Image (spheres, helix red, strand yellow):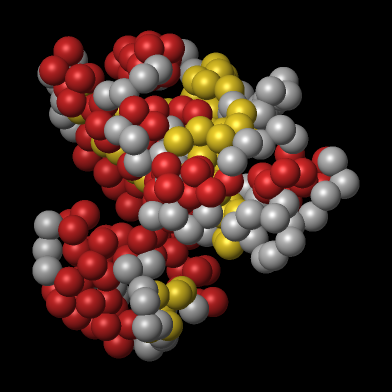
Length: 292
């Protein structure tokens, strides 16, 4: 077994996070072939297969999953140590879910950069919970309800505020919706939070056909915009699509719940002073609502 090359480890880490060589290559500004070649070389050096190649994307083997955890932690430590060599470069690593990144945050980052040119925001889109001790993450935004763990501070970014949405054409077919059970006959789309299951079960109803499942809210929203059915999504993610006419609102959940989007960060006296600037900006953007 040969000692692994650091660049190969970085490419393995990117491929393991995205489970896709093309997306890993885009992150690292390399060609897809270069990333795939380095990963194959790493597998040869280690003597183990780290990925299973699938028709669409990749899947980690058990060895690959076990190997990625300490590799990710070690790379974060190296990156953090390198950043500390240049204290004048103020960087905040912000971890958010992929749907929040694509449907809300990315369109607004230009506003932050224009107002705060001295702060570099590194955006990480991930469904995994952030480990503030090892991932190098300064701030995370996740759906949930407090408390979030010992030593963590949090503030509500936006309530969950679920809305049922569809394309304008599909909305014309649906007609009026007076109660949750009125959705049962329709084609329903949901993400990993399985909100349709919970809502219908709460009123003793069941869908008349299998609910189409997606692993990200943004994908369910896109399917709804293309007339595939009715999606449930937090209002925070819907502003641009509703304003642009891609989606129309059919119903809004009026129940009060502690669940929502929360900004979470460590309660540390030695925190990066720019963290407060980023948190305040996130809260101001959510409070503004509307489109980017």
